[in-house]
Amino acid sequence: MNKNYLIIGVLMSFLMMSSCTSSETEDDLTSKGSPAKVYLTLNTDGMTRATSISTANEKIISGGFACAFDVNDAKIGAVQSFTAYNDASQPSISTTTQATQVSVAANVSSQSTDFSSVTNRSSFEGVTTSLSNTTSNVQTYRSQDGTNLPMYGNQTFTFTSNAANPKVDLDHTVCKIELSSITWNFSYTGYAGASFVPKEVFLYNANTKCTLDGITGSIPVSGESSDASCAFNSTNTSYLSTGDISSYNQSSPTPYVFYSFPNGSTTPTKIIIKGTFTPSAGGASTVYYPIVINKLQSNTDISLDGGTTKITSHTDDSQVLKNHHYKISIIINGKGVDNVADDINSSTVKIQMNVTNWTAYDQKVTIK
Image (spheres, one colour):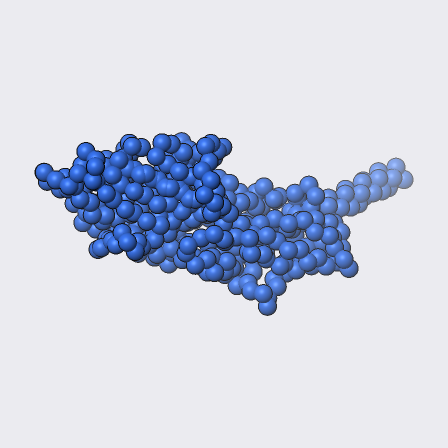
């Protein structure tokens, strides 16, 4: 009998030890440290500069998500949402004093359920957002809203009396593509006497999905919304098109602005001018002038940060990067291509591009 009591006692002691070990493990994963608050100051001051389009709206924060992490990037506390932000409001998140950094994603299409499997900073940054969130109606031409551009930032901090007040610098996870002017002049070329009428400007190979950190873009689309005769029919990507250009004044050009997620050089993002080309003798035809954004080639001048010095090489050739503003002007001296997927002969256009940080690039193109 005594032997049985001894065995039972040993088993109960073992179970109690196991229970304590399990409890300690859960605490280590979720709540080590004392309860604490992180009060967020979100900084967008460095986002927009050296641009010709008003950029005040591009700094607006309509809401988002934030999460604290420890020094090893493990999540400390839940991913928490916040609403519209301004200088008079300061969202806060609950965490513990084990946290050392915070990540913030603003103006994203992501929902709370998208963060259910987040365990660390990498998985938070890997949640995706959609470019369609920049418009209220994807079928409305040139309808992207500068007040709803996705942003991301991460900042380290330290606690004082279980409270921290980090200033989180946010970057746009989109790039800004601005076609500032189109001019055409066929004098003294093989197309003397020809005319051109622009009918549509749109993005091509524009990535419409991206991770919250703005590193990995995907799902490229074309905004083209007209057929071979330039008859228009809106689609679910028409927000990346100007729609019908009823008239265009070369002396006082209309700037066209679009936003897109980062993209590499394998299938590069392009801005395309579509219109009617009529030679001096012969019938009119629909042509395209596809311009690869940020591609350094003959008849293309690229300068940085609003300067006039032309670069001769760069490491991000034919790529579009987050938080960059690509401002492009085009001079047409020749006939465009017949198919939207074709590349233009660099002797046909003269491109000038400036890149600044919103970062901006100026690109000037002459098409001959």
